[in-house]
Image (cartoon, rainbow, N blue to C red; front, top):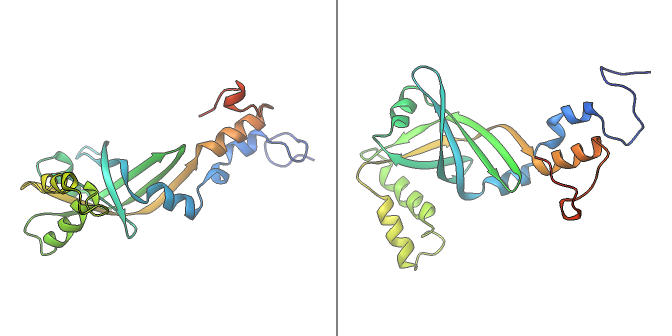
Length: 189
């Protein structure tokens, strides 16, 4: 008896139906934390006044469930985020990825919390937080603290995650090939 739109298969074998169900390829909470923890690079996205999505690769710090990044106040993204705070962050590392969404908050010089936010953020972004005695990292921290900088905070609400390693294994099983890249079998995704 056939269930759904896919043909019967032997138990324990992968099918195209399994291949289309990407929920099995999501990252667990520990994998998500390892993916975004600390600092790294992300694609940060927002929308233009015409509704088009735009994104750039940026350095970020992830702390307390929020992504933090910075740029000069003159960047078009700052005015766009002030008008439309909906933003997204995509992190892709070690064949794992996750997309987050949230409403961005712009922190600017003159804000009540500016001195506190810039103090910890620039130390974390430069690496001076983990190695405070390093004079080079302290110079990087001071360099980041330019007069026209703003810091963008985005609460992280997970949209989706994906493990390309799981995807590759499932694909190989679905087509009947479980060869590893080291044995000359190639690599998917």
